[in-house]
Length: 254
Image (tube, rainbow, N blue to C red):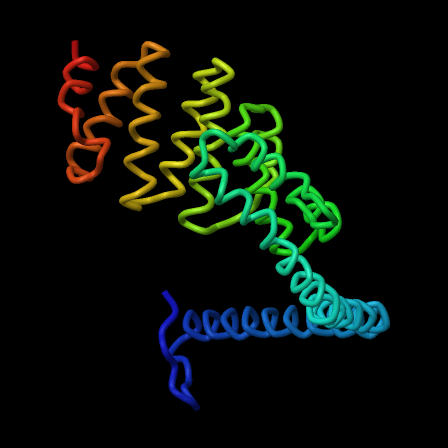
C-alpha cells in the first residue's frame, strides 16, 4: 500500500527507493495521459469549432423561433379560437339537460350553424392551439352521447392533457365507447388508465373503479373486479358508487 511521504523524504533503503521511483513514474504517466487527452480535446474543438458554434446558434434560433411563434402566432390564434368556442359549448351544455332535443343540440355543437363554428370547425381552423385541443375532448364527448362510438374514440384519443379531471374523463369516455361496442377487454384497459390518471380524485376515481369492476366481471376476472370494488369500499365510502358495493363485493367473491 502506498503511504504518505513528506516533502524532502529520503528512502531508508533500496526497496523504498525503488517503490518511490515507481510511484513517481506512475504519477508522471497519469499526468502525461491527461495532458495528451487535453491536447486531443483542444485539437478536436479547434478543428470543429465552426460546427460547434453553428450547433449552438441553431439551438438558440430554434428556442427563439418557438417563443416567437408561440407569442405572435399561437396566442392570437388561440384567442380567436376561444371566442368561437363559446357558441358550440353553449349548445353542448344545453344538450346535457334536454333529453328530447339532445341529439340536435349535440349536432349543432359539433357542426355549428348560421356562420358560427362548431367543435369540428375549431379543430380544423385553429389546429395546434389549446382551444382546438379542448374542442377534441368536447367533440369526443358529443359523439359519445350521440352513440357514434368510433368517432368518440378517435377524438378522445387525439385529445392531450395532464389535467387530473379532463384526462381521466377522456380515458373513461373511451372506455365507455368500447363498452358500448361490446369490447369489454379494451373498456377495462381504458377504465384502469382513467383510474391511474385520476389518482385519488373523489369524483372520477370511484366512478371508473366501479366501471372497471363491472368490465372485469364481464370478462370473468373476479379477482380484479374484487380489487376494484374493495377499493371503493375502503377509499371512497361516501361516493355514490359505494351505496351497494357490499353486494358487488359478495358477488365477486362467490
